Image (cartoon, rainbow, N blue to C red; front, side):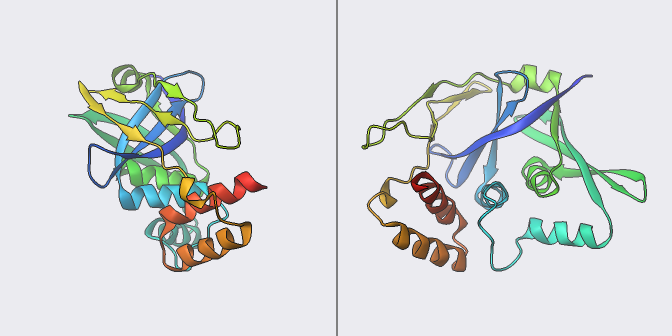
Length: 209
């Protein structure tokens, strides 16, 4: 079976599943998206790995795993989403130590969080993408300053006959703040380990640069 490489398109909060987030993966050489419902902790961990400038005061679980692996010369080579059963994705982490390769079963959200920290590629099989891959409808939102908003609004995700509505996690509440205030709020959010808020603040700061 042929493998298809994926990249992370983004993370959005699910309105229909309380406390759940939708991780959107995009095929590198195509237009299909693979939506995966993940928990809040995993979404937070993935968001922090994507947002390089946010440094938690203490290592998260996936950071601890990375530190542990580095200490014992274990390298994550790639992650493969290899199975889809009843709407649940199953993944394998391909590791290597002393030129010996090992395959470790993992939840997809954990596997992706680790792949980001090891700069490892993410793959799935073409058959899985054929079954669960979808084309998302996108609409752009205009800023008050008449500039196009960078955030992507996902109208709806159709999978397994269910409709999952997703809303973008915007930064409207921070637009009235000065840069100094944003940086203070960012430091406070990181100290309090509120990384979801920290990611939004970081986005708003980036837009001002």
